Length: 412
Image (cartoon, rainbow, N blue to C red; front, side, top):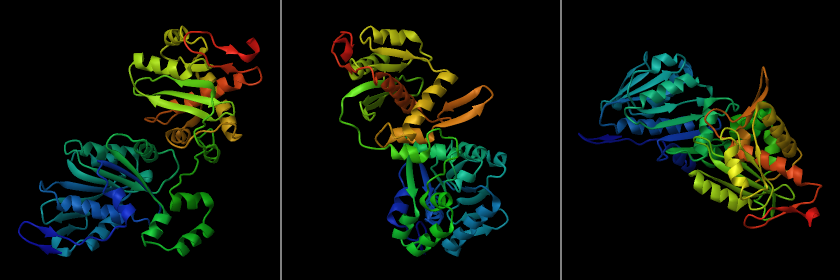
């Protein structure tokens, strides 16, 4: 470490390339799902030390963990990492006062109400999947005035938690967010752990536990109707075959309009989603579905939109979602996925399928995406599969142009 009147130079620990890209990503929010011992804590200590030491406004920087002992672990590591002449310490408050006037706090999220009120220039949320969601809300409020960056890190722990859902938003390309995964194999490549140690952990631990802790693969909480393994077994390339059935989910509020087409074998051959005004959406839907049998979600917007589409494409049929009708629709799709009767390309649709949930209520089973996430693709795929089943065994439809009525082969 060297210092002058205006400059401080600190030799920080070396980070391996993937670790560096994840933690020093340019986006304001970086979601990092990581295996144990992948270097997420050290990397974020380096990142936040850099943020605090470069802070000319002498502001607060927060490291927040689920419980006090975890905060203290990070605090002790920070003290060992920084040259002693760069800070004064308060071991009771877990606070480092840095030579440039900024303050580095290590806090517990056990009592979220205690986190409100401050203005914070940067934040690290440690072990996010184990932190109370209310604590995240409180920390986010402290970044409002400063527009400060945040790093959200931790092992995965199931799918029913706010960190998993926020990670899916980041993975889906949400504005000003980046998503990264650091696994045990990345740590091996980075020289942090050995292959022998990972092999021993795999031998000693249950498979589901090993996958969460070392591969950053969340277990199925039992709330997914399709089954995680079954979803992955249906992943394939986008089919080049001709469609025989379409499903369309119309955008509502901030959702997407999604069109899914299936070929005769049940493979997705058309997969498009967009957000636009109704005029552009109408034209695009009509061009995509042409004369093929199509099922369109008419819930909420009602029948007028479907009737408008039917004037040009009589092959279009409306489908109203209710709790019971959606249950039947999703059970049909679940059966198709579990029997590998349907195929789809990897990407955002698979992420939607993996995030999709069901829960038992007093009135029956409710199917939906977790709050804040989308299920437009899942609904469009389910509608397409429902229509696909109706085309089997009774001839098939062929495509026509213009407003001519679509025909079945047995009508020729």
